[in-house]
Image (cartoon, one colour):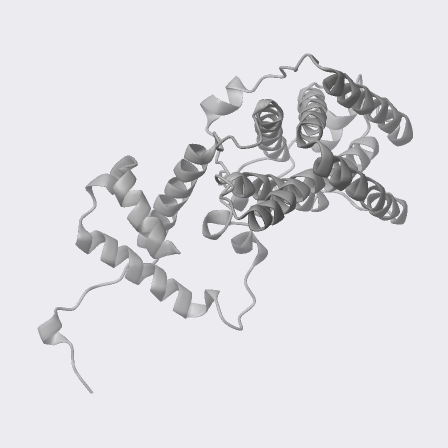
Length: 325
């Protein structure tokens, strides 16, 4: 996979990889192979912060400071009957969830936020996987291409799951929360599966509205966490970002928990746009986000090579100096 990544990165001409020579590519490959043979694979236990690095599987987008500053809380206005149904369902769930968790957006407590984020992220990872599974089986059944859509939905599901795992590094989970998560899956999983079977655009619109509330929620949490005198400010100021968050989003060593929340919010805004886009696309349309996946994959390949060349320098021997057994 890494060899393929290097070839793609070289061909695409991204950053400095476009000018790399064949010898440099070969050197990078040997460096990576050396790292792999030194204990990162096989029967050795791999640290979770290395597993959280998604360069070797579904590649998440690494947000720049400029991109984070441009994230907005835009909302889609319902146009069709199914849009209004999806919006109404989301409003009922939103207000009901606020009541159950005791969430007060004016000054939320750490307990209500912890509960809210764990339930939200555990549920948000379900629709993407359902959509990917549906498209996968449809492609097999219809003997047709999927135009890369499966990849987009799988990346979304994995991204939401990573949000949950990051939150679990910061919050304790009660038995009631675990039961609630299981109940949500048992109920909403089959419901969304059946609805997607009959009308996929409605599910994507519903998820788009769900992500809108997530963007709003994370925006409120970040704002309160940066406001002196609030409960979140008193509890979270100066908290370090979890190691897996630093690895997943390539955060700085001194990144904080608030920095992590900003990246999660950016992910949610992207999921919002993706699902609203698919809600409007015809069923046989090509995936408009393929180019984004390619750029993210190329960027990840470049990062891996650069990191390997810095951390594991190796020397080359000429063929004539190599001894033979």
